[in-house]
Amino acid sequence: MKANSNNLDVLVIGAGFLGRQLAEYLRKSGLNVGVASRSSPSKTSNSFKVDLLDSHSIGNTLRNSRPNCIILTAFNFSLDSEINLKMVRNLLVQLSLENQNPKFVYYSSSAEYGSLKTLRSKFSEVSPQNPINKYGEIKALITNELVAELEHHNILRIFNPYSTEMPGKYFLGKIWREIRQMQKAESGLVRSIDLSYHSDVRDFINLQSLFEVTENIVRRNDDIGVLNVASGTGTKISDLTEMLITKYCIGRLSLKLDESKPFSSLPYSIGDVSKLISLGIIPKKLEI
Image (cartoon, rainbow, N blue to C red; front, side):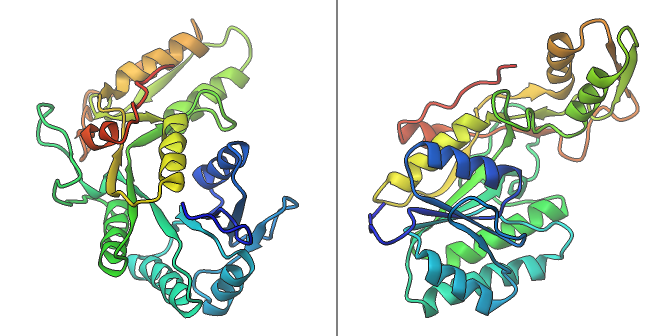
């Protein structure tokens, strides 16, 4: 990262689960970090209110922050693909108008790939895009826009992130919500979790590893293009759920597998981490 003492080191755009945790991690690592989002600025310093559909708002944020690096985590699933794409285009136009050329990092997703046909293969960075849901389609569109418009870019295709150490605990949707409800229930009460798609195999990446990869990229003087951020190993959803139950709800939560729906439309998704390892980063395996 090319340093400039008058600039923010990093501007994280998006204050959702990943954006907030990432900003805090980078601050603790010694970087001067700002956060821009649609919500009102927080009491923390370097907080900006920005609307990516409003060019004036984007321009003001860029002029006030002058970041050496932008990390785009913002995404609005409730909006269609064209509006999400327009937000990214607006940002790129304003960067050009402001004559700013920061390192650009985009938090994309393994959903760009779709699903593996078998467990004998893994997705590499050159695997074709074949999204099978709206989320993957939007992420792929934005990736393709950034690759086409930015000569230098850093696209992180993130597989399923989780955390056992940071606020928010596991980022595992239904499974964790059920366990949290169980923890709040009366002592001795036994409940069951009805698990669909239990035979699906996913690649879970530790949130700490994701942030370490991001910091590595921020501090580099070069750009890495497209990069899988994954553990390189697959875990069956039912096995993961059993591990969580064993650790947090011994004797109080049982697992019921829905045999009518053992697989989803995305049964297998595992990342090839050869490129990640070539950067000197060894991803952490799934640990509960």
